Length: 72
Image (cartoon, rainbow, N blue to C red; front, side, top):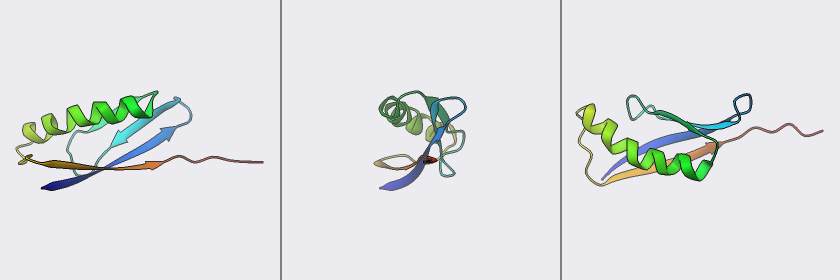
């Protein structure tokens, strides 16, 4: 089983969640919904791994979320 880390960050200016990964070449997606973005990553990750020639059986995705907030 291969594990790939996906970083999900909130872009406050664009009002979207962004998914990126140092482990999966070419992975950069965005969506206004965190759940929708996770689903998109689950579809795109195996496809990008295949295109990159990286073996991708039993892919395990580890999602890490970051969102910064300023409070008064």
